[in-house]
Length: 428
Image (cartoon, rainbow, N blue to C red; front, side):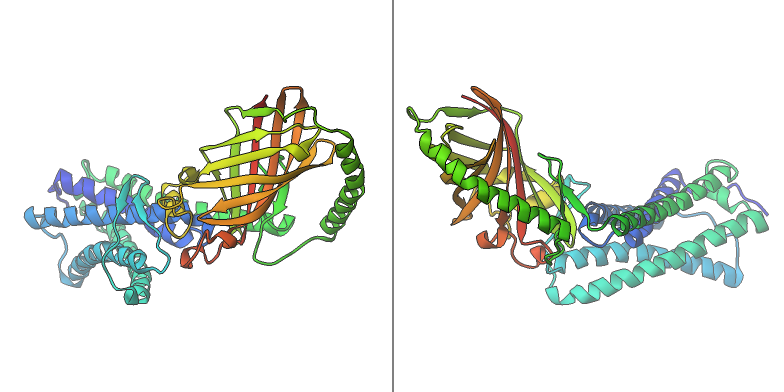
């Protein structure tokens, strides 16, 4: 038996769009990393889920207002096929709604921005249903897998065994196009699942073979062990640190004598920071590095490199310019739990003393004012070049907890120390 009666063009297009989205969504939900490294994929998962919800509502409305072709098969097989179709509609609508309820009631307030463009408000639900929403979302996901398998097996049975032209009803030809689209749907799901699974396995193997993950210093190119919440220092690193400290202590008297002998002839020269510099920061989240930067910052520098004790340095940072490269995370950075930029738009560091450590290496003590709190803060930097043109690079380690940057559940897995690196050119 065969039939040429087809679904409408709108129904066919909606069917395959939902099928492709659903295959990728299910695979993404099970394969994406569950730590901070999967943040962007988590946002994509939410975006695709809401897309499936909207497409399913449109499809259901179309189905209710446009009569579909008559059912090809009767008996228990026909009833099972009808049940699968009904349950598919329920799952495709209920699963995204459960996910929406889950993120709306989660103690970690992560905003949802669909595809990084359209903000999605949280549902006004009580936080007490979070556990229920979580369980419901997971159970519905497994139900969706079961229905997906039944639907595919049923379609293939009709096409290859019964040869009744069922696939042609959801295609614009005799069924070949639908068969190709079905293969594409399966490939999308498999590709997403195994692609993400493979990348996670590779990262795990890399960490096993080479030790703790490192975050690359954007200025010096050197790596530092990622903070996992405990102090782990290799013996070689400890020995190197001891040697460097001993060298610095030995160099201090010489540097102090040199500084004492070199009295400045007048006020220290002022330096203008040139465009093109960078101010970057890095912090760990569940062992994974979160790397960001400040896009807007400025400073006033008065310093004689040969007599640094007379230096006066002020650096101002526009906190609203902080970015991690993701619109949702950037919105969280500006919020009250982190920088609270509506009340504290700027951070300021002012030097109190500057000394030469050795050669072109300097150390500056100062005061950092952030979120209305002022604390001592040391930075180290190097000067390269000569005359009235210098290249500056340096770093600092900031205790974010001292300034209440990152509070509440949203910062529960963040490391306490934030590494700040800077580089710029200056001219006098």
